[in-house]
Amino acid sequence: MLARISNEAPRVPWDVFLRDHLTWRNGEHFALIGPTGQGKTTMLMNLLPLHPYVVVFATKPRDASMDRLLQRGYVRMDRWTSLPANRAPRRVLWPSAMELDSEEAQAIVFHDAFRRIYREGHWTVAIDELWYMANELKLGKDVRLYLLQARSLGISLLVATQRPANIPLEVYDQSTHLMFWRDNDERNLSRLSGISWRSADMIRYLIANLDEYQVLYVNTRTGKMCRTKAPAPRREVRT
Image 1 (spheres, one colour):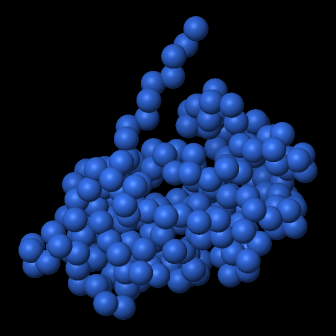
Image 2 (spheres, helix red, strand yellow):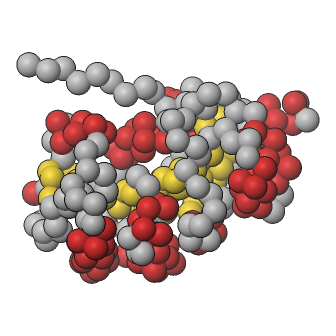
């Protein structure tokens, strides 16, 4: 088993992964799946620069990761504004979530953005907590439509979730790129190992035995797998 794992899912440095293992085209979807605290947000931040037109849907009242994006030049919007893409190619859509009953207002803003972005096409939409978007904000239908139909419009979804269950099943069938972090929960392993028709046992074993912060990458179209780690977030210099 160990020899087979080393051959079929080799360990590769991040720069080698980007150069030799990952080709993420517009219209291809990307899903990051693993428990909290393992590095999903760090990975998301390292993937965002790979596409030219990006909007991150931010749902938390305060979020240091979103603040870092704003410091790097992302434009904050509290509702979607159809500016020419080249005037604001990197955006954070961040409606207020400072009240206990903010969900209804958030859902209206995000649904409107889903609708407008669908018409514009060619955006990458990043969602840092898919479970919250689908279940608490009740926008699972919008997510499923993007997964099933938006590819032809050049739209990519980049989604992260700590719960492999209770998210749209289309995440597993329609995402070209999947990344998994270490998970020893039997119910989660059972769900995750079902995504591959040829390597289910290996995927199950690998996910249960990944190093801390290490990720298993699976290309669902080619079956190609490898293990890597994204670089740690760089510290912002304050002046």
